[in-house]
Amino acid sequence: MADIDYTIQATVRTDKGKGASRRLRHADKVPAILYGGKGEPVSLELDHNKVNNMADYEGFYSHILTLDIDGKKEQAILKDLQRHPFKPKLTHLDFQRVEKGQKLHTNVPLHFLNETTAKGVKTEGGVVVHHVNDVEILVLPKDLPEYLEVDLAELNLGDTVHLSDLSLPTGVELVELGKGEDHDQAVVSISAPRVEKEVSEDDAVAADAVPAEKSKDDADKE
Image (tube, rainbow, N blue to C red):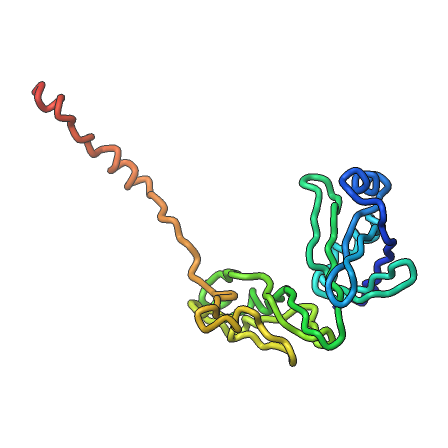
């Protein structure tokens, strides 16, 4: 886990609307909102470049962040992040307050271990197929993991890891499994590689030598 300080300096934003947001972005600021918990929603402005650099780290999306709002600190998680369609710019961020003792409903990424050395890959020529790259969890703030690990070392060709096979840290629940057995979706599998049939030169010559089927009109002329 990278040793990163996920503290974001923020200022309460009173000037709202599309025009105000455009002015913020031109000033290298980015609009954001903090909501949830016992407090009222608060519109914020953040330093774009600092937040954009922080967003390069995976932990930014699953870590408990600290918002320093005009000197008052709030714990939060990132719930949504919007980007410009073609510029390397953030356009808006949504944060949800973290309340001590209340479970968080959030997503965490999966880290796949031993992909190249798994039995089904190294000795059987299989390929790893990812079905999901993150999972939705319920967890108390103190137990929030930055990611979950999935070890593929012992997987053979044809094997599949499902949600119910994941090793979960204490206090972590998978939201999908709480919906019933039919939601035990596949996470990762090792499959046989697709092999496209190659047409040999002899086969191509033989195919060209086969006369085309005569049309009904041609048969009548004969």
